Length: 227
Image 1 (tube, rainbow, N blue to C red):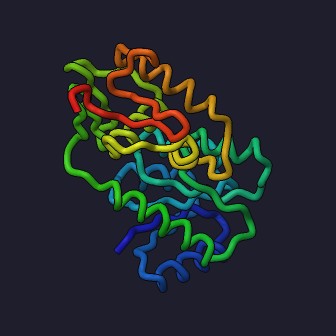
Image 2 (tube, helix red, strand yellow):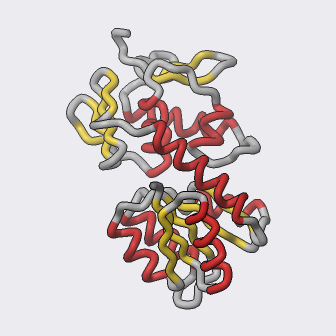
């Protein structure tokens, strides 16, 4: 039974969502304060956190960053603002998805189930190994030729996404949607810049690529040099 934590200070909303999700077969916990949410997320054993940004004790944006610092649990942010710059900020700060208020229980349920499908599909025991590259998604550690790679959060997410699909060509559109959470598109340069940095850290270039190969007009794939 998937476990969901709702962090929402409005009692009526919190109880209504908890009741709806429980009826849909989820194990639901609900809390009214941000700090309690951070503490519960740090304890683990959650499948999804639904986080309201308007909390009484601490700004929800700070709660998002604090949870992300101690846990990789997927986070769906509930916000009253739908401006593009606000959504971009939320996603860059570590949210996996968002809903704009007012939203229905059915909409939230659909987003929760989509996230659970993605994480379940990505379940894997141990690190992903491609040639001399090892990517441990659980520990968020990537090693190359026995040395730990110094990667930013998005660089790691990018590399891990490709490692999970070893040998499969992934389009830039898919990368923007799944890694950068830009389902309606975005600048290809975002992918290109991160790809260039990753190549440098793997000791290769676009002209002499060994691991990160571009299939022109299609996308990018991660392969072992001898494959």
